[in-house]
Figure 1 (cartoon, rainbow, N blue to C red):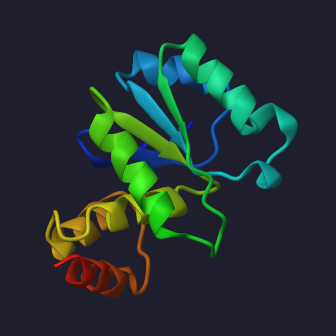
Figure 2 (cartoon, rainbow, N blue to C red; figure 1 turned 135 degrees about the vertical axis):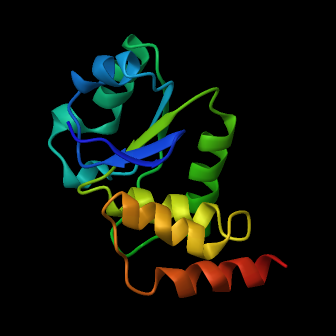
Length: 143
């Protein structure tokens, strides 16, 4: 399992296994967000199995299945709500962690300066060309 810290209270990573839920809880996470669509994974990694494992480990679980190339504002808002409602650190995953970090970044558009968002992603090893422009556009549309 790979954990890449974006902020002290939010981390992302590539696909995890149900057995990793107990490790995440032991590491201090209180909630997990599954950004991986069921169509991309075998049955043992699909949402129902991951939710059962998360809840067995005492973690709050959110399914926010982001289709590669099909990100919507509803997905951004769903993830933002899950993070803001969590009582502590949150871990989100997808295939590589890129979609999870992108959704986090867009959920914070206009709330955190764009350069700080990009720096946080860079620090975690995620360089997403053009994301800064998407963040700026989203922040401007919220004004």
